[in-house]
Image (tube, rainbow, N blue to C red; front, side):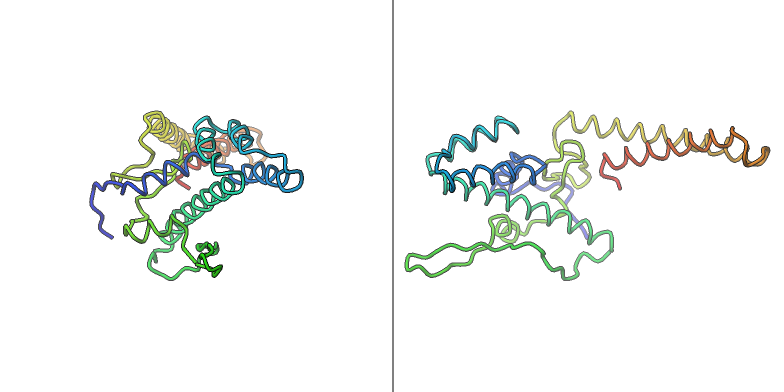
Length: 238
């Protein structure tokens, strides 16, 4: 598939990316914290909107500020907004990961059953139900977004738009530097691994298989292989 080398991110998608990136990478723990507040509110009616801000401070000040901007809506509406944002992030991440899976199987155009609920509902004034898609789905379809350009930074784990097709990290200089430092380490480990494997091969030709030198060299080779695997995993190359 051909792509333009450079493509700007649509403003409404950029706004959504910035919002979902306020949420922590560990959504499960975050949702557990929020559910505790909801439970306290419905059982004891003691929770106030400010408590959301207090909980979010454990994650980031920016998230706390966003929560604080919603408190005028009341606890119930505030809860709905937060859960909607969480669902949008889950949906966005699902599309990114699903596309990568499609690429691995060399069939990105096959039909795929979405295992999440990509629709939400609301009530009309006459109490009938109106079915709507999540915001993220509307944005992706309406703007004909190339999912290839939506990526997860292997360093900070945040969603980013690849303005350049070859971009491998988000635009933060620290993330880019860390990524390339890891690539250098991988190259150094791989170069060393080739040398250590040759030494191991030579030892096996000259010595008895039970010789401790062979065991020690094999352990060194295994450690290098594990280091390479770990660094590649950190860089999202596995």
